[in-house]
Image (spheres, rainbow, N blue to C red):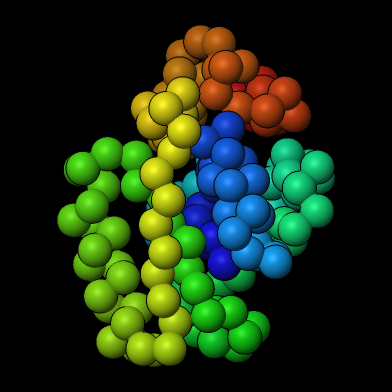
Length: 153
């Protein structure tokens, strides 16, 4: 499973899903409700956008979830959690998450992929910030996300 808030899904996210699809029979893109993060888009919109963006990746399945990632993985028979590492600065947080998840369920492994070079700088928060200031985010997100951002803002 590839969990995240995906607020919004970026080209970096879809790149990781496409690359993971070459490694796994199926990649469940698990869109977290994450109410504590106060996402820009509601859960249903984030699920819809992710499904549209990933429609050409047959191994990808998009679902929403609430609660602990490791519990969702366990309940759905998923044995690997995919995480992306864009920069060294991501490592400490990701290491803590993986360690805690391992304590909660040692049968679920965390697997890391680094982004393709063109996406190492892309994050949902930067996309939201640029779009919020009227900037062009079309190089960072799928056209359906550009449209959704324009409609929302």
